[in-house]
Image 1 (cartoon, helix red, strand yellow):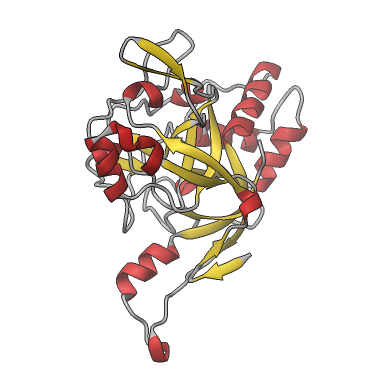
Image 2 (cartoon, helix red, strand yellow):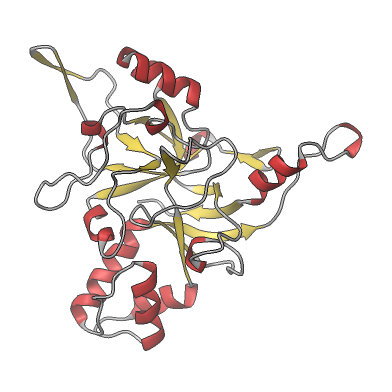
Length: 285
């Protein structure tokens, strides 16, 4: 694996091609009753996929497309995905249950830039040419994540340990934004949450009950106060963690770009942008 700057260049075998969702329908998040959970896609910022961000989407592969009166087969079908939260997306207590129909596709290697998102939003015929990108779905990946969010300690990597579990958390409101992200007033990258490796091991080895610290931690990480010490909660918590799991934390740290002669350049932007990265071993779904 070649390293360019602070970010490893993924090998071709690590990549999987997907396409950004450019309409409310292709991005649609629905609950078990078919109720829509997501906000409308009305701005180019809603189509952006931040580099180094978590990518989620519907499990169903779109193989047909309807333009005009006829339905036709998609020439090269790919999954429609999103890498951002919109204002209308469902967040909060027990909201994670409604996202269990989604799947974590991986981490965006380069994502979709604002310029390409503009072109797609202006003309949907550009979707196939400019809307496809690759996600890292196995091996090592670099994820943009706050070092210290100043809020929920489960949403930043300060004091986290190697081996802790990294979860995609579309149900948790992301209050952080980074250099190169979409306008935070319109969209924010999907946040991550961390689960202590000891809690994860206890959960996965339990069958009928959970230790008190494990149950307390899961209630906070999943934003679900209804979890209880019984077999049903154990099974449900296992399913939820497995569904949202991205991988295991492998490395954290601060990186800097050095200019010619070893002089630090763009220290504020690069240090913040590069500092807020972590490496995870991606779990193949």
